[in-house]
Length: 484
Image (cartoon, rainbow, N blue to C red; front, side, top):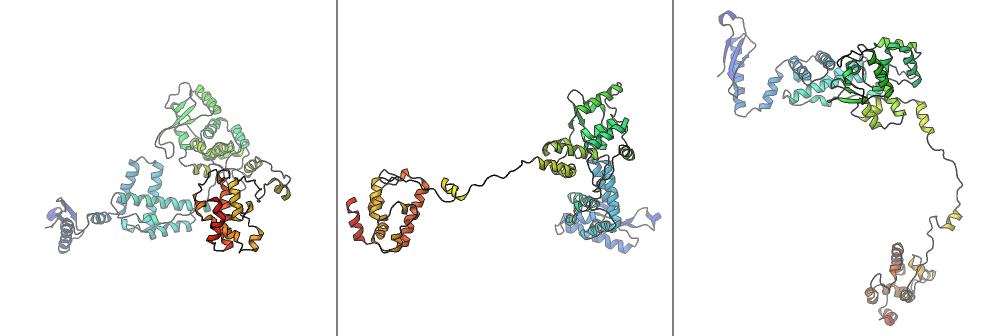
């Protein structure tokens, strides 16, 4: 039986009552009733005691009861637990900061206080409001992904019965791309290196390795293997990688790194290769000095990350297979390499079209020449060799070689009541004809090709169907008596 009391005794007369009871597992639970009224506190404690009895006897599902208990907590407590989980599994700090901001804005936008407030229709209306406010489709999808990931974690932890946010639709980012990068041409990249001076090694390093700005900042001299021309990218610096990766170094970059190392002979293995990287405004100032426009005619722009796009594009122009380019770029999916890091221009595709062979017209052979050579649709006549026994049987049945190839004589067409035709049909069913072994020397069928055999069978069947004459047994006996 549940009991109620106030913490602090008589000194806490204005305090709220606390209910004390044992749960279905026999563990004592002290839970505040949230009221200062004695009768109301007694009713709340009795209700909790009744719920415990129902769970203990299996009337109420334990899973549903646990979900109900979790739903009583404030939504911010669940968000704090989720962010601690993200930090524990090693997610990037910047990524966690973005999730924190997005979840806080989502909670305020839908006015959520409990997990049950994360309804699909309320979240979808919030995301639609972002698009109406001028946000891109990419921003819409990123906020949706954060909300879905949070609810999926709650479902796996047993805090909600299901993840209903999965049905919230995503938008097509290709129809609303706000920032589209373009690649440097070889001439533009050469001019950038000419005016960059002390920032030239960074631009060379970023182009030949294809590393992101974060990975370039984290590169140290101990990661460079001068003997094997490799550089190691540690876990956490490469996006989406769970293990260290080794990137091959171009001979031009290896030469530049050796020159830089000679200038700092006392640098340790943990010293960064680039103590500082160019800022965004410094990069654009270098491009302006080199006479490189930031935006092209299609609105595509250049930034520091465009050096990575340039590497992917130049690999494609060099004829490198997409599977190999994917490994060089450090992607997990070849579609990412082809879609975002291969900015081929119209002039580049024109070169590919010019690489096709030149097809010239040739003289067309006429139909008469085709018939003469037997290469048209008409089958060329072939000479069929028959044995003497087969020729005698053909004469007795009343058909010649043309009937074997599917051609019926004109006399048979005009005289369907010819007894020769009926005799041929009956001869096909006679005992003497059935007793002859197929392919023996008597028939001579072994010398004929398979196609001719099929045509002969069809010709014989067509003759019997066209004649439609019932054979006379006496005529058959008279004709086949010499063969018996």
